[in-house]
Image (cartoon, rainbow, N blue to C red):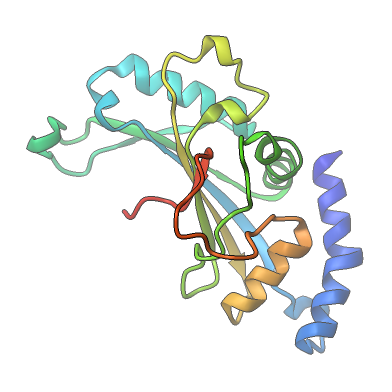
Length: 199
C-alpha cells in the first residue's frame, strides 16, 4: 500500500509541480528516485561474526530485502581488520521495496527520533544524490528494542536520476515529504540522525 501511495503521489502531484517550477516540457524529464542504498558498518564488531550477522538480520528486517555482508578489500592493522573480513552489510532497494522503505522511513521512523529537527540540507553530492546517517536502528518499529544487543547506525543514500542540480533534487525530496531543517545549526542536537561519516 505504501509503495503504491508514494508512486501515485509522484505521478499525480510531484511531476506536475516539478514541471511547473523548473520548466520541463516532458514528464519524462522530471527527476526521479532511482534507488536507495542502505549501508551498515560494524566497525570493531568485525572481530565478532555474530555482531555482523545480527546487523545483517536487522537491516534485512528494516528494509524488507535480504542484506548482503560487505568485506574489507584490504587489511587495516590499526583496527585489527584482516583482508576479506566482514565489516558490515548493505542493501540496494529499487521499485516497490524502495518506495515501501521510504514510506516507513518518512512516516514512521524519523518522527520517532528524539528531539528531531529535520535532516541536514548539506547531504547532497554534485550529482544531486542525497545521503544522511542514522545513529540508531531502534527508530524502526520492525526492530524490537529489548532484543537489540548493540546500538547500530547506518548510512542512507537516495540516488536521484535526471537531476540537473542540487536545488532540483532537494525540491523533489521535499515534495516526497523528506523533512529538511530550515536552518543550519552550529551544534547538532542529541538526535538519532546525522550527516553520514566520510568514507
